[in-house]
Image (cartoon, rainbow, N blue to C red; front, side, top):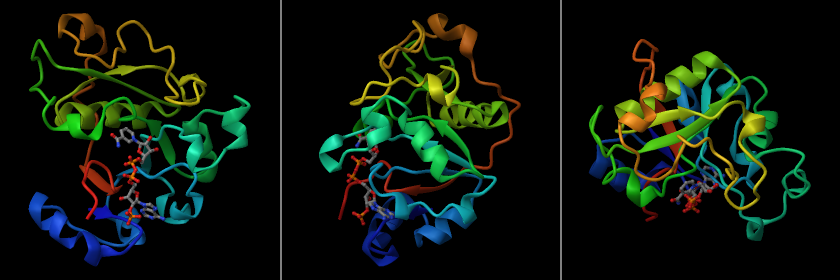
Length: 203
Ligand SMILES: NC(=O)c1ccc[n+]([C@@H]2O[C@H](COP(=O)([O-])OP(=O)(O)OC[C@H]3O[C@@H](n4cnc5c(N)ncnc54)[C@H](OP(=O)(O)O)[C@@H]3O)[C@@H](O)[C@H]2O)c1
């Protein structure tokens, strides 16, 4: 399910084009187990904490100060993922999808085991949530590399991911080079529950 700030009617046509339901932010929060908060960090009221309690919330957010400074990021006190996690204390926040451009997600996807499959870094403080995120990334065509906890996602203000492990390259990786970080196929995953504008053109 897809949502935005202007209401479901404004994205109904996109939803039909991609075979995706549309709804309000609360509808999306209630819809599934995993939600991508693909909005700019400077829009905290957009993230409803209560309905997201217990759910996995993906944090693809990078920090763009021109939308407004976030002091905890400017000082290096927190990472973007930790900023989101503080706003959603009942959710399992996982950093993912911040290292790939929206326009690359579909064309760069490859089947499991493909030699030119990309490996995307992801991080989180909840092991089960990370396993689910790895399974999700595998399902959409990507290997994943566990880059640690939310505090380890870096302090680079512009991309928030300055020092990934050697295998956590955001570039094309060979299947062999990331063999040690194959996703856990046994992890449960019920499909992405919603997205706040992720991967879609604006109408
Ligand atoms: N674009 C990329 O390739 C890419 C890649 C990786 C990570 N990211 C990260 O994703 C985040 C968003 O970037 P973007 O380029 O996708 O921004 P964008 O093009 O401005 O899209 C933001 C989306 O969020 C929605 N939104 C804004 N306020 C909302 C609210 N209050 N409630 C619900 N939805 C709301 C917008 O819907 P309305 O138009 O209706 O307001 C829009 O669909 C950033 O942190 C960025 O770092 C982006």
